[in-house]
Structures are given as C-alpha cells and as structure tokens.
Amino acid sequence: MNVIPEIVPMAELQSGLGEVLAQIRQGPIVLTQNDHAAAVLVLPEQWNTLVEELEDLRDALDAAQAYAAYQQAPEAVRPWREIRAELVAAGQLNG
Image 1: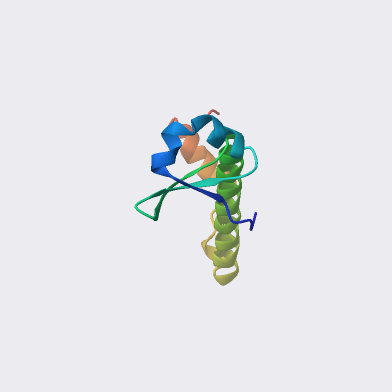
Image 2: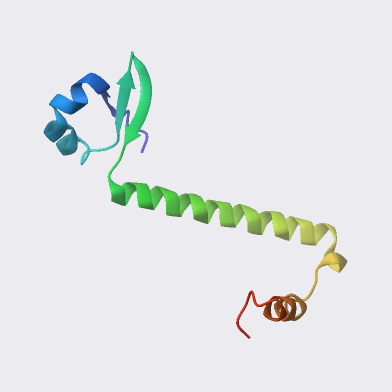
C-alpha cells in the first residue's frame, strides 16, 4: 500500500461526506486541517486487518526475542509444565 492517499481538507469533509465515503473505498484518505495532516480515514475492515497484522508482527518479534534469549542462556529457561502449574494454582489458567 505505497499509494499516496487522497487528501481532503476538514472543511470539505462535512459538505462532501457522501463523496468522501465513496472515495474511501479506493483507499485511505488523509484529512487536513490548516494544511497539516490531522487524521486518516480507512474502512473498518482495513483497520481491523492492519491491527491484526500489527499484533502478529509484535508476536513474531516477541518470539524472536525469546528465542534469542534462549540461545544466549538455555539453562535459564523454565519448563512449560512448571509455568503451567503456577498459572493453574494462581487461577490464571484452567487446569
């Protein structure tokens, strides 16, 4: 998605809402106020996709960092059965 989004001044948003809603189906729209970007409009489906992708990327980064830490000090890793038992005892995980 390297396409430059449509730019719409905030002053035009209210008067041209129907047109903006039609344009948003083509891609994100940058709203400007006093010639500065103020907000970006995207379809709800696109927003959800972006948030899910971001969460997946964060999970992948966490996994990569955990694996790197494991490679540095494998003796420091606790077995899952110990961690699970603690979580069950604390009521944070169903047994």
